[in-house]
Length: 337
Image 1: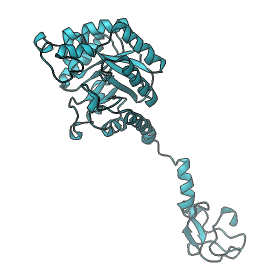
Image 2: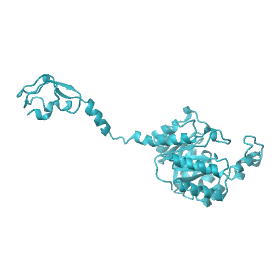
Image 3: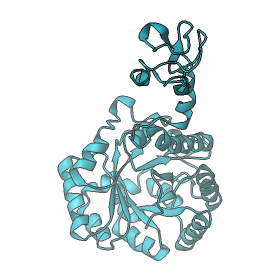
Image 4: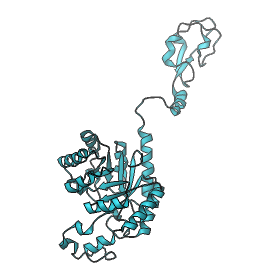
């Protein structure tokens, strides 16, 4: 079960640890300082990731990690003990420990680790075997919906409902980076209305403006990749937020709730200060002798708003002055009877 936080921020470390436990812990430190709710990693069973011809093909993208796609992927995996180490370190920092499971063996592995919640990547929305396997555990699960058609999301949601399993949906666009014109944040409320579930946003845009807008539009959870340095070698660093950006994004997200408010129309304490300064009150336009009945010709309406409000003028007009009132005097109720 995830901790209560609205919106809930998932700091996606993903593979940006580059296979280093020390780097992974530094990422966890950043997520904690930023005020995220969870830090998230990714678990793949490399042999199940692709066919052998793909896994064993030469891959020159990251020679630091390996010479084939298999070697690169294996370099980025942690052992069971390393994952438990990261889990303990994460929880000690006050964060939830979340991991994306890419296959059923990964789920079994993560059950041994003991994660706080599972994530399913967008391409898993149509992996019915994985969806059913995980839903049967009835563990907190977050599903991204990039690349999926509504009917495919329907099927995924139905699987979790059939097993009475908790599920959060994330609107997502699987484009790296996502152009602003393709963010389609209106889908957040479409998904909420269609499924009656908590819905958030997983962003892959440059910067974080759409993520802030998503929160303003009602996203209850947001997920963003982050890195120690965008220039590091690896799959996701370039499209990730650096530490100062993650910290600034979370701070901005926390401000959104205050900015959005409750929808109750009331005069705030700060507004009362301004109101007293700028609202108009009844002011004597001419000298008013004692015993004179007050009429409109004797009154003007001016700042400040600390006298008889203009809206109450009818309750005073026609009453007689109990003392002489000089011109340009802020009128008060006790001047008349």
